[in-house]
Image (cartoon, rainbow, N blue to C red):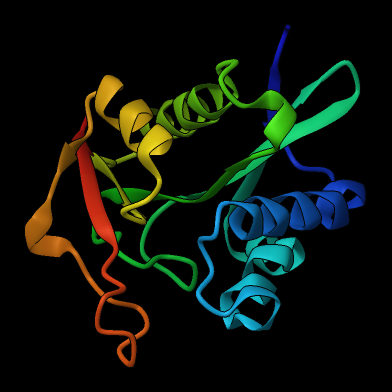
Amino acid sequence: MDIEIREADPTEYEALGTLTGRAYLDDNLLDFGEDDDYLHELRNVAKRAAAAEVLVAVADDRLLGGVTFVPGPGPMADLAGPGQTEIRMLAVGPAARGRGTGEALVRACLDRARATEGCTGVVLSTQRAMHAAHRIYERLGFVRTPERDWNPVPHLDDFTLLTYHLTL
């Protein structure tokens, strides 16, 4: 399967939002299911695209997945500090998993980071249960940064996001 990674077209925002939300729901990554506030963020691709770069993976005119590349500190950054870019909201549809789609999306973000003037590193947050994503990150050279782990939902004591960093 030849996977093309490119910037999302606005006509794809709704489909990507649905795919992203569905991936998180199907993998039980949202504590409150359909009522989870983060689900609305995952589905709001237009909002992400206004503040960052949203990339999609496509093959044979089918949307396979997407990711948000945050070029530095700003409204879409959770972790990125000066000289850092950030990867957010990586999602791959069930039919495209295990075929290199997620890795291709992360590699595209790394290419963009390397092309970003003054960028010295890439950061990201991930949930404990996202084992396939962890394998991708580690294979590409990311290292865990437990000192930066954080909880975006303070009223849920056991919801700590793991963090990773890649030095460029």
